[in-house]
Each structure stands twice: as structure tokens, then as C-alpha cells.
Length: 334
Image 1: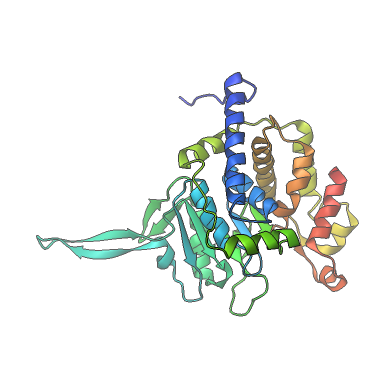
Image 2: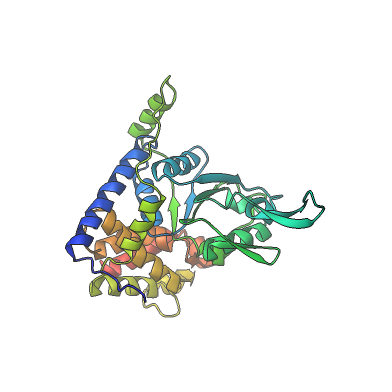
């Protein structure tokens, strides 16, 4: 018999929410001692992990994307691995393969050797450099939390999260991610250059004799428990309506917003609504609130929607950006 869902309003659940909130604030501060000037990036990444999703990190080289994933693995107590994606990378290189072994008695049998995808936090570095065949293999792992090798399914560890990186400048020799795979990422987080004070702090902290090291704050069991808690957070009718209005108004065939009708080729699907619902709940939990607000929807609209929409040729010719379109959508619900 399935246990009924507990209300977030019970004293036990409120205590649990406060405990999780404090843990994730400590985790955010722990990451911040190693990653400088990227507070928003760290916060959005933690929100995604708390919501149980995957992250696509886009930024030029040298902004600390790899260091961020390594630090998150340490702070969250997760088994993390890194795979450098290249055009010659094959699905077996990340999923694993079966090898033929012969026992002492002469009996032969196949044994599955797990690939690097069998971890809790996988960094897929420069994911768009892999071939479509390898990308589709990772897509199955991200969506189904299992892989298929030689007709047999192998379950991945729990929790399982992919933090993929992509360089927006170098596009030669790359394979753009298909829309179906982009949609599997709960958020696309764009990483900008740090401001002057943060870059000064980076310069002083990373070139001296002593470099700050991250410490474990929570573990995998805590993260799974927190992810279950997120799904119990109540969402008010005004927030549900704001999510639906935001997503549906981004579709050119059903929108009444001129900028969308004129400049958007295709808009976000239902998975965008699901992602926003989980993300606003996770943001509320991290901030110690009992329920999300419309402000949470507006704050997370950019990272949740920017990779689930596409501009048409007219928009690109006029210099219209996706950020401008999403800001226009937010004004509708703001």
C-alpha cells in the first residue's frame, strides 16, 4: 500500500524543510569558498540538483565550469566523474561494454564492465563535440536513469545527475544538440565573465601557496530525501497560473504577444511547465519558504526556457535575443 503524501504544513515537515534549507545554504557557502563571483550560477545549479534535474552550463573556457562540478561532488558527497567529449567518443566509452571471459573450468561468459556514466554526478565536458550516436546514448541515460547494452538494461546509481558543458565560441567540429536532448536539461545556465572584484579574488586565491578546498556538507541520502521533500511543497493557484501563462504565451501558434508571434520559430512544450514547477519549489526550499511565489517563476524563467525556444530568421536579422523575448513573457505575469 502506498504511503499517502505528507502535508508540508505539519510540524515535522516544517522542521524538515528548515533542516534542508540550512543544509543547502551551507552547501552554497561551501561551493562559494572555491568558486568566486558566480553566486547566481551556483544557486541555479543547486536548485536544479534539488529538483532532480540535469544542467547545461554554457560559457567560454576558463570560467570554472569543471571546478564547479568537482566542488559540487565534494560538497554534496556524490561520486563524480568527468568525460571529455570528442568526435571519436563511442557510446561504449561512456556506457560500458561486455567482455568475454573464460573461467578456470573453461566456461565462457560475458561480463559487463561499467562505464563512467555509472556515477552520481557526471560531468559531460564539451558535450556538443560528441557524435549524434553518442549523444543519443547519453540521452537515454539522462531520461531513463538506466542504460541498455547488448539487450540488457543496467540501472544507474541514485541520485544521477548530468552537468554538461558547452563552449559557445568554438563551433567547428561540433554537433549541435538536438531539441529532444536539450529539453532533457532542466536548466541552461549561461556563465558570464566575473566582475572586477570577483576576478581580483580569483587571482589572489588561486595563485598563492594555499588554495581553499571544499568540504563535504551533505551526502547522497540527504539529497534524495530533500528531492522527495521538494515534491511535497504546495504550490498556490496563482503560481500554477503564472507558470502556465508564461509557457503557453511563448508558443507562437497560441500566443497573443506580438514579439512571440513575429520572432519565435517554436516555443516551450509541457516539459518546460514541469521543470518550472519543480524549480520554483526547490528555490523556495533553499530559501526556507513554505511555498513558492510568482517572483520565483520570473527569477527562473530565463534558465528554464532559453533552451526550449528558438528564434526565427527575422528575429536574428533584427538582432532580437532570446533573453528579450523571455523578459517580454515575464512582464505579462509580473
